[in-house]
Length: 409
Image 1: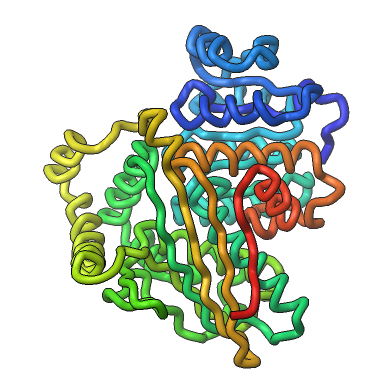
Image 2 (image 1 turned 90 degrees about the vertical axis):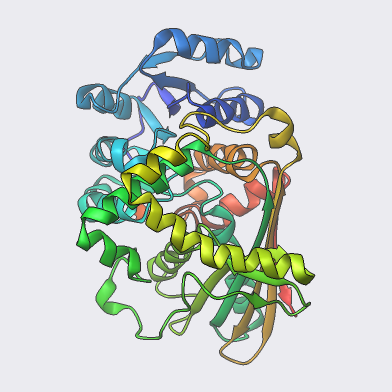
């Protein structure tokens, strides 16, 4: 990356949004004092308000005018920084010009997307450009899909160190407590609208290898369904479909391919959601199994979308401070290797997953890109957290209080 002579180490685009302000606060509290951070957005007044609410160390941060609809402003933004972090979603609507500006300027990039078509389009359009300029374009640096992606990397590292073969059957069981994300809901709504009118998008969403960097080279091993029927865990609990499992699983498979299928050519990976024990857990699992496909189908109907908008958070809003503080996430990964060995991995952390924990994940991703370049995987282009940031991000998140561990079971 041609970072010499740039004015900033990190520019946060979307700092006036709900998630962006939380990321700004994390950077203010945890970036080394000499890190050159700037805040970017459309409104100078709102940027100043956000900056005023941050710890004193941030009160001198520059404020930069930029708009995702103004290509010239994005080009200037990208040329002036080593790393550009974007919290401006839905990314299908606002993200592509930002990725292009970074790819062409040789500027590292990180976002919070959970949108399969966006990652696919960004990779198709700008992977080669970014490889040529040395830019790392790292997607999905929040709750979707850092814990899934890094749990698998941690698991792979332990299995490889033990000489226990490669990964074959992997199931991640997710549990969490937190508030609804207006940004995530807006992204899901936009995907449903797009899929309803575009058969190519529907085929893409149905492909378990939709995000592969080399689709033709993927193995023919069948993958578990994205929307499984309710099932049991080894300790007698109930699980159902994971709401974001379809995105996370495709990103994990992309990470595997980007690393030369290091996790295993026979990898079968699935995510499910823990719903509890007994009758209550069984009913919740059944509700997820029935409700998720019905909800997605309903979002394709304009009248249903309008009705839903009355009851869910709007984009740019999120849970209150108490919900953010008391939330948590926990992901247990159960795996069998090609040699027949059983392993367990854990990814866990405190804070509302979609906001408090996500601000840690994205903030530390930005710091890794800005400060740890010599230690990062030697890759450029369209990347995932595991392939682009790897063990460095694992170390940073552990230091921030998150758990990533793996051991034989």
